[in-house]
Length: 183
Image (cartoon, rainbow, N blue to C red; front, side):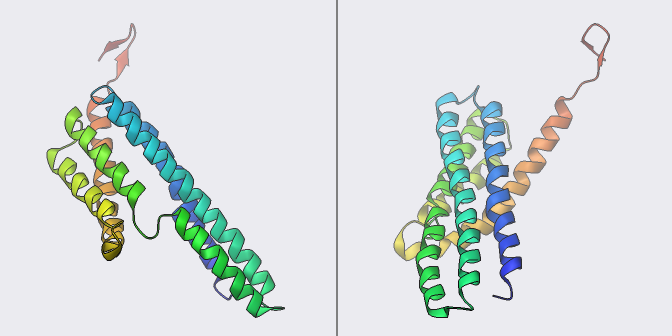
């Protein structure tokens, strides 16, 4: 109860804000990679947007549920604990806590499309395939702990993706002079 505010902020950032950012990224990657792999990027984008919506929903359910539990706890701790036992599995289910099927599939599809398009380095593409495979493997019941490895590896993948996108944008920027001609 004493950490309620900090937990709400953590879930707001790690689920709600991340989910919104993920939806923007999924759409940006769709625009960039669709010329080389249109069907693959349509599928990847659908998966990425679904994942984003479920992450946002999970964070909102967690925060709303936690708020109700914290309010109820002083007057009825037993009922509050029972309420939490109903709310937490819903939040966890929405965020795919027991396996990263959506995140793994999205990273895998985007990485394959990136390799086809030649938009990113081959090393980055193969890293993404490995990260995506780890996420998908985490769905297998004895391998659910791989979700932790997926999350950590995906952070590295996101960082590399960000640098790759920034580097490519800088390389393609041109200053236009009057008449629309490159300087």
